[in-house]
Image 1 (tube, protein in one colour):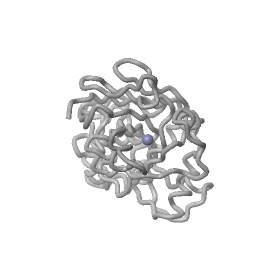
Image 2 (cartoon, rainbow, N blue to C red):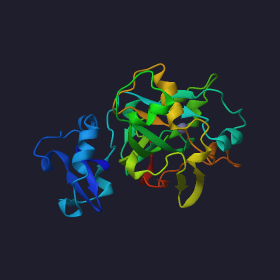
Image 3 (tube, protein in one colour):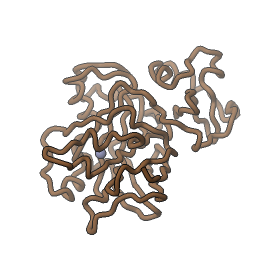
Image 4 (cartoon, rainbow, N blue to C red):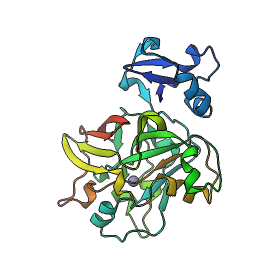
Length: 280
Ligand code: ZN
């Protein structure tokens, strides 16, 4: 199942079309994508019966909002790819390095990214969408709490992030439009192995990041177990799992986003986001 947000209404992408969840189900399922997410198991069962011919409208990526528009929590993990930790000159962490992206930064898969300075960087990431509430979740049971995955960009203003010591990860990564996610929440049955997916980021047509999630230091089950040992996870909570090597701030010379450039973020089995940069 691929859950999308079409102008604030929950939809299921079927082939190259979309089925409106509330209309098609005669109100059995809600209009709001957050409320629809909270019914994940029943929704998936219902959606399994949909066929290509059921789509009412063509799937227009430009009309899509963030598939999870208002999560209670957005966790993000720093330094979670071996090659990225190496390029940043840092040791491999022993426990996950966690910060927050405030939910107000979330935008859709085709939204503009508003550049706050000349030091804004890209970070393509696998994003986990929690589907079932839980606390004290064991690694072996972690995937039962996952609704699915989407592509994410952890856009980062490095000047704000590293303005002083210690660095301010959360603020530098939470400006409005700094959290594109999408294009859909893709359920686990459509993702053969989240621990071995190709992910890439192109900027202005140049391949900047090209990696596989098999390079993750802490995989999805370990992250869920770690976070749920401290916080109750709720349906809709997001986990940005960290970015691989190839960000602009570690290049020689350093390279940042410019107005007019397009960021193309792709993850195997999940899809592609295209976000244009505009001057702040
Ligand atoms: Zn990141």
